[in-house]
Length: 394
Image (cartoon, rainbow, N blue to C red; front, side):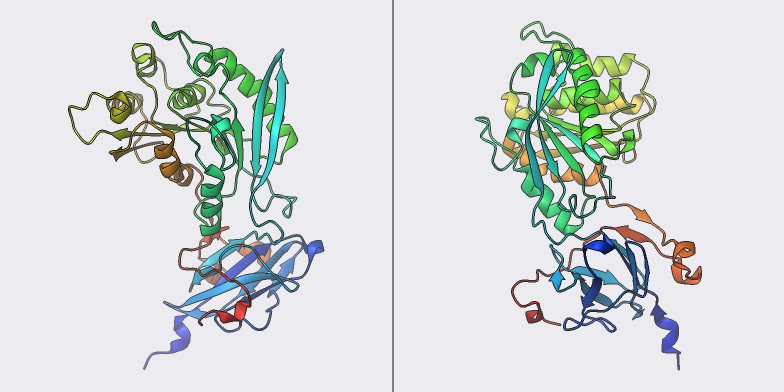
């Protein structure tokens, strides 16, 4: 006979929430948790609460954080035996919060922004967040009315947060409808003109980024600062990260206009020393169903993006590490395509982080803590709690 006690794995749930906002506890589907009664933490240090749920190998527990008599927003968490789950819950905000029509002035120029704060921002006053700057901010949100279409990115972010698929972040929508062609292009094109990206990048770095870091609780390091765009916005995103890698550590480039000015961006990458420190690049494009397609919107710059992939790998970038490239067959060069796939670069560039349980801090043994922490993870097989929370099957 085997000793079943040897199969018991310490399973830790660490909840960070300001102690002055209420009493934190857990309810769940596995003893010592229950849906009817709140379980107090095993240990507490300031705003940090640690819960222990002994479980056998292969078991799952479904749980929910409770503040006094209030349930946290979002889906239930599901934890596997032996995991260490770190949660930073929010109770009062059912969705992200907008700060609209921010005007930044710099050297006689002005830039309009919309800032989307994550759901936990008001309830986690000690927490700082990574930042993503997104071009074409006039078309990003569900309430946007851009004639060329909208992304509904706030809805996408909300689902990703609720699923625990990405870290919470501050998203800055940078309006670019005015002088878009001029501001987003690094050099003039013989047919279209433009070429003011150097001046616009200065406005972005010394005006917009400086203002956002001063005004909001950001993680201001380059590793936590990204820029994303589509079409000409993607061309600028690559240019910004290549030129100022000290500011933008990540660039996501959807359906990039690398054809601009006789493929200037490709030639620039081929002829320039790679930036240091090195950014992380995400490239994608649609691809026409038929190989002889002549409609440029259906071709979607597929071959130009492939050329950029080749140029970046020749410059030392490593596919799967600091360079990602995806192709979407049949997707054309339009907003609906970008809205449908923006969740991919968000997950690749702002993943949920893994870290070990701090056994010294909590006074637990090494054997108990040879585990990984999933920061703010909300695993996939969770249920919504609605109405009376006791109606769940358990």
